[in-house]
Image 1 (cartoon, rainbow, N blue to C red):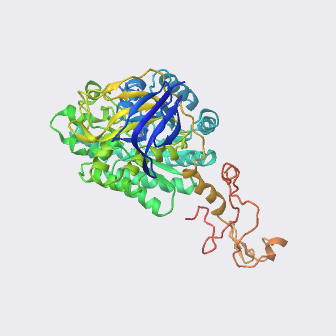
Image 2 (image 1 turned 135 degrees about the vertical axis):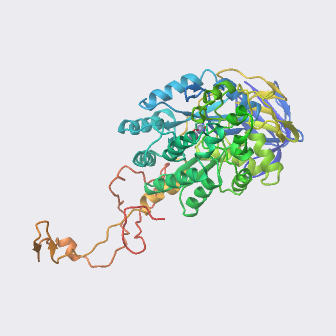
Image 3 (image 1 turned 90 degrees about the vertical axis):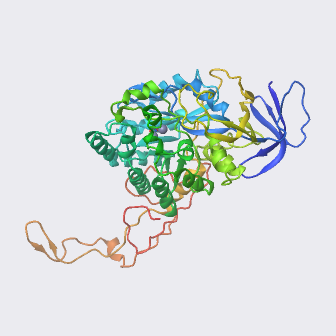
Amino acid sequence: MSRLLIRGGTVVNADRKFVADVYCEDGIIKQVAPNITQPSQCEVVDATGKLVMPGGIDTHTHMQLPFMGTVAVDDFYSGTRAAVAGGTTMIIDFVLGSRGTSLLDAYDQWRGWADPKVVCDYSFHVGVTWWSEQVGKDMKKLVDEKGVNSFKMFLAYKNVFQLDDSELLASFKVCGEIGALAQVHAENGDVIDDQSKRMIELGITGPEGHAMCRPEEVEGEATTRATVLAHQVNCPLYVVHVMSKSAADAVLDARKKGRIVFGEPIAASLGTDGTHYCHHDWSHAAAHVMGPPLRPDKGTPEYLMKLLASGQLDCTGTDNCTFNRNQKAMGRDDFRKIPNGVNGVEDRMSVIWEKGVHAGMMDACRFVAVTSTTAARIFNIYPRKGIIAPGSDADIVVWDPEASRTISANTHHQAVDFNIFEGMTCHGVAVVTISRGKVVWDHGKLNVERGAGRYIPREPYSTIVYDTILRRNTTRQPQKVDRKPYSGPVWTKDGDIMVGDAAPASAESSAADDTPTKDTSSSQTTTPGSSSRRTEAPGGGRASSRVLQPPGGGGSGIFFG
Ligand code: URP
Ligand code: ZN
Ligand code: ZN
C-alpha cells in the first residue's frame, strides 16, 4: 500500500481554502483534516507556507499530432512530463483522424500512442474531421463504449478538417442526442483560404501574413455562427482556444441570450500577443504561428483574463502543439506552410497565476476553478478530479505563491526548442506535483514513469452542460397553433380557383377555436428530428413535460430563449 501525507499546507479548492493535512492511500485522497496522525511507512511532503491545490487539468493539447506535413515534437511522454513539472496532472488531448478515417480507428490509434507514454492521467476529445451518417454512429459508439463525451468540429482548415454549416448542424444534433459536448474551432475557413491567397499575391509571404489574413472578425463571425447553429438544435457548445476580444464577445453575447456556451482561453492568449508576428527574426515570428492567431491588440490578454476571473469564460487549456524551428521552416517562403501550434502545457499554471492572481485579478480559489475544477465539471470527471476531498484521485500540486521562476526554452522540460513565454518571470511555482498519489515532481526533480498515467473515461450528460439542455428539450418545443381550417377560395396551379369544401375540416379541427392553447398535458411533445432526444435527467429525475406556448402563439420550429 502506498501512503502519502501532505502536511501543514493551506488546501485551496474552488469554493474555499482552509488549513489542513491531506492523507492519500493507493492514489486516492483518504482524509483532509488538521493534524492527521502520521501512519507507519508513510511518505511525508512538507507543505508549510504553501498552497495545496487540485492538480491542473489542461483541457486542450495535441501531443505528437500529425499535422501539416509533420508531427508535433512533444509526444505523450515529453508532453505529460512537462505538464507535471508545471503542476498539471491531467491533459485532455484530441484524436484528430484524417478525412475518411473511421473515428473509432483514429481513437484506437491515439490510445496506442498515448497509453505506453503518458506519465499522468489523460483523456480524449475526438475531432469530427469529416461528416457522414457513419461518423454520427461512431460518435455514439465512442460515447457508449469508449468514455468520450466531447467532440471537436472545425469551421476552418478548408479541405482538411473543415465542416460546412449543414455538417455542423448534423454533428451538433448528434451531440445533443448522445449527451456529448460540441466543441468548435471557430474561424471562417473560407475567408482564410481566400485572404491567404491574397496575401501571397501581395508578396506577403512571412508569418505576419498568417495573422493578416485572419483578423479578429473572422474568429468572431465563426464563433457567433457556431453559437447560433448549436442553439438551433439545442446543443451545448464549448468554444476552444478563445484568442480574441471578438470571439470572447461572441461567447458573452450567446450567454446573455441564455445559450449554453462555454469559452476556453488558453495560456498563449492570456500570456502573450500577436505583435510577435512582426518580429524581425523570421523564426521568432514563425514560432508564434497558431490558429486562430495571437492578436496584435495588446489589450487582449488582460481582456480575456478579466472575463475568466469574473466567470464569463470558464476554464483554460493550452492548445499545446509544438514544432521545432526546422519544422516551422517548412513555411519559410509561404506562411501557409508553417505548421500551426505553440507550447503551453508546462507553463499554463504559472502564467495564469502571474497574470491572474499575482496581478490582483483573481483569487486562489478562482485560480483552482479555471485551471482544474470547472474543466472537471464540464467534462464530467468531478469530483474524481478537480477537488481536494476524500475519495478524489490524489492528483495534487503543492504551490509556492512566494517563489518565482523565469520561463525559458533552455530550462523547460518540453521537447520543443522555443518557448513563447521566454523571459517571463512568474510568481507562483509548482514545487511538488503528485500524480495518482505518487510524487512525480519534487523541487525541480522529475520522478516519472512512462505509461504510469491512465486513460480517464468520461460519462455523457455532465450536469453543468446538460441539465438545462434536457429541460429545454421538453419545455421549449415549438407548438402548432390550433385553428379552424381555411375554407375560402384556393388558387390552383392550373389557374382555377376552387371555392368551398376543397379542404374539408376534420371533426377534431373544426372543434378548435382560434385561440392558441397552452398544452399542459403530461404527454411528451416531440417535433420532427427530435424523436431520439433525451428529456430526462440521468439518474432518474424526470424533467417536467409541461409544454409552454411561446409568446405570440406561433411555433417557428426553433427553440425559444
Ligand atoms: O494552431 C493550432 N491551434 N494547432 C493545433 C490544431 C488546432 O486547431 O487546435
Ligand atoms: Zn483548433
Ligand atoms: Zn487545438
